Length: 191
View 1 (cartoon, rainbow, N blue to C red):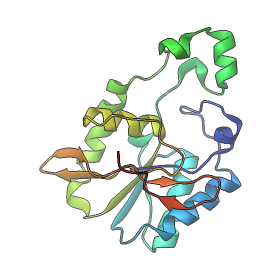
View 2 (view 1 turned 45 degrees about the vertical axis):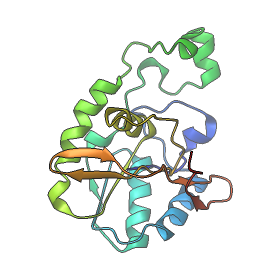
View 3 (view 1 turned 120 degrees about the horizontal axis):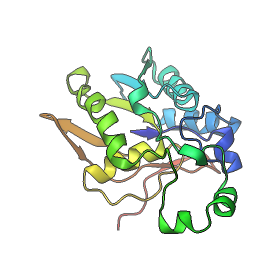
């Protein structure tokens, strides 16, 4: 599972949720660089939000695979009334809510995300050996936590490898990263 490249709202520090801003120029560069390290891929599926769709299309073009399949099951969590707001704007309107991890009305929690995404993920098992799902940080984090992985915020074009076998999804290997400043792919140091 790969988080989309930087969007224009990521660059502005805005919560996106189901909003649909496009990739930034840096996001496109990140996707092109990540594609160089992709290797053999059987299938690429993506959220239907344009930041994920465009990232997936760049990966598919570079990897020579396609067409990209779109599925709204892989959308980011709904951020409710925080959609479009920066952290400072959220703090001003909802003092201390972020620190206390209190979510606003309309915010889609982890259980709802996993309930939405897991059937789509499990349906991928017979479709290929290596499948790339281009999605969003909130959704990937919820899936990680459902698999027992301690989640830390996944950066743009960060990836988590999962293994799907016998209807079971498990995390497999370290988080993979694309540095947003020098656009190179690295694995974080082992801890």
